[in-house]
Length: 136
Image (cartoon, helix red, strand yellow):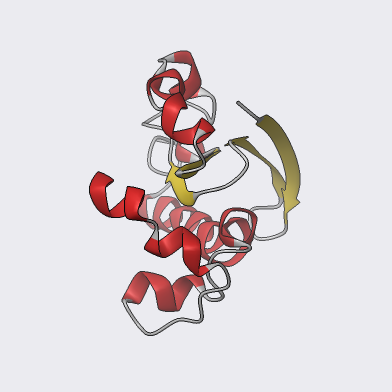
C-alpha cells in the first residue's frame, strides 16, 4: 500500500500540519484523530491494516490529518471563547486548506459537496463506482 507522510505550513493555524495518505486512488476518506491523539493514530491501532484490501483495490484513498485539540478544547488554560476561536481556525484549515490535498481530482468544491449542492465532478468514476455503492 502506498503511504505518504506530508507536512505543510498552515497559514490559518500558523503552524506545520501533518497528513498521512494511504493509497493511490479511490473515494477520499478523511480521518480525524480522537481527543489528544495524532494523525498516525489509526495506523497504530491497525485500522489502516483492517481496510488495506479496499485501499489497495483503489476503492478508497485515506487521508489522516493532525488535530489541534490540545490547543483548543483540551487547553484548560484558555478561556472558552478562545478555545472556540481556535477550533474555528481548525475548521477553516479543514474546509479551506487541507481538503485540497484529499479532494483534488475528485470534486471541485468541498463546500458544495458537503452541503449537498450540485457539484462538478472531476473524476466521476470515483463517485459512481459499483464497489462504493455496495460498501455504502
